[in-house]
Length: 372
Image 1 (cartoon, one colour):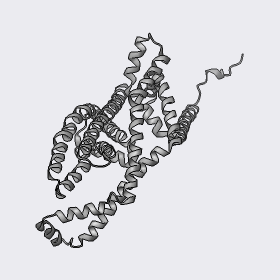
Image 2 (cartoon, rainbow, N blue to C red):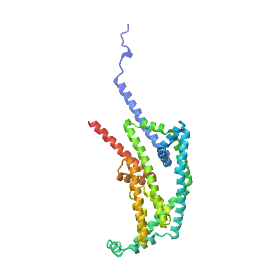
Image 3 (spheres, rainbow, N blue to C red):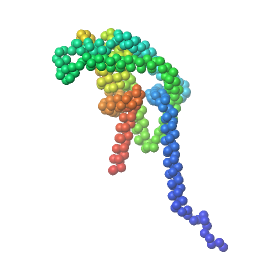
């Protein structure tokens, strides 16, 4: 009879379990590093067309409810519903934007020609403003060491001329650089179709991949979608209305380039409270000091009462209410977003700010729960 113990009954040493735990931890860390590297590489590949991808995601979020309604009426035919939604986007967004862009390019080229020919001369405008200043104001300027107003006028005129030429040249080059624009636009439409069709499944996978509690993920994603809807819809509505009203006023007063200045006001209106006034304000001052007092006062009244009312009434309703952010944070995040990301920043800035607030709210709430 063999009295040797059965090897299968001998427990494995603890060292074997420790090694297996270390091996699992090493594999997990390796997987995380691989995931980070592949994600960075994928982002690097998408970087040339990040604008197209970004606006495809934004448009899909904005028109998701439209696609769901159409899909419900078509009894679940997802492909047809997504295609019809894409056609709606083309008709109500892309075609009007294309028409306005074409008119803007033509007017920008006209402004460039008039600046180069001297027909539009900002130095002359500065001289006219200086000549119309009262004696007490010119004396006050000299007292503060601004006696060399001739040089100041020249520099101011040159800077204004360069700014106008740069703005108009960018508008012209935007219209002429059609090849890259067409490619990016095609990528955006192609991706938009699949985001509309498969958006719910993609959102579910993203939610599953985020290593947070379900309540936290729901809060962050809902805040992300709400800020995008509010920022894009609200800011675009405010920009279109303010730009249109400003362009109408300039056209009525006979100011050349009314459409171009209207677009500038629309872009600057992305900045709450101060945007459009940066254009119509100096024009109103110029009209008053050069003798067109009635036109200048009328433009100020129109800008403060009508254009300003749009900003004070529509923006809090369309933007601030849904973003749940104070006005000063909307302003700062919009400015920072525009400085870092360009035109895309008027959406990315408030979105990052809203996620920042939501993440810190979740962190504070979790710490309070842990301390109880």
